[in-house]
Image 1 (cartoon, rainbow, N blue to C red):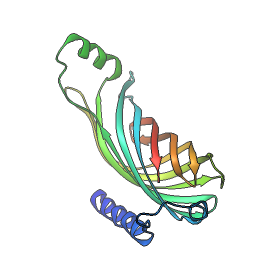
Image 2 (cartoon, rainbow, N blue to C red; image 1 turned 135 degrees about the vertical axis):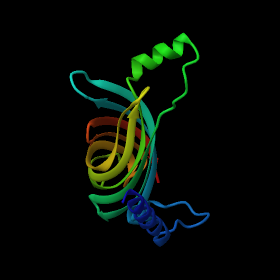
Image 3 (cartoon, rainbow, N blue to C red; image 1 turned 30 degrees about the vertical axis):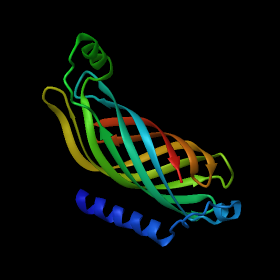
Image 4 (cartoon, helix red, strand yellow; image 1 turned 90 degrees about the vertical axis):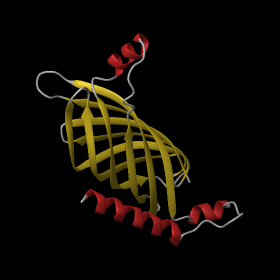
Length: 194
């Protein structure tokens, strides 16, 4: 199911980009930016994941990558497909300093991937704030010495941010929340939209 969804979303995103190719050796004028219907972005994520198995709450901070491709439906509404990859190094701590850092920031390692669709409401102005709501399907795992939790499924995503540019192009700063069944994740992202 997740593999089919990944393939469908990739093909949909590819069609969006191919349907509106950027002109070669030509920079956008202000008028062309007004009429631009497609957009894409790449973002770096810093996430806080919390898991409550019974009496205690375990938490972890990890980083990730988010890639999106979208289309403007209205001057104030857009839709985007998103691919998110949570990356966590399982490298052994070689010295005491690495071990202390690990114990402060990680009760467990968290990694996996998700794919989804987001609806975005934004103002048709430069440096616009926006809110987003989406549905993401994922396959993730949380582990330390033993596997603490793993699973797959679909969850709702909500978030807010600001685009320092125009029509979702420019520097994007976001704060998002999603619950992967037992693991709650709040993440900040910084990225560049085109």
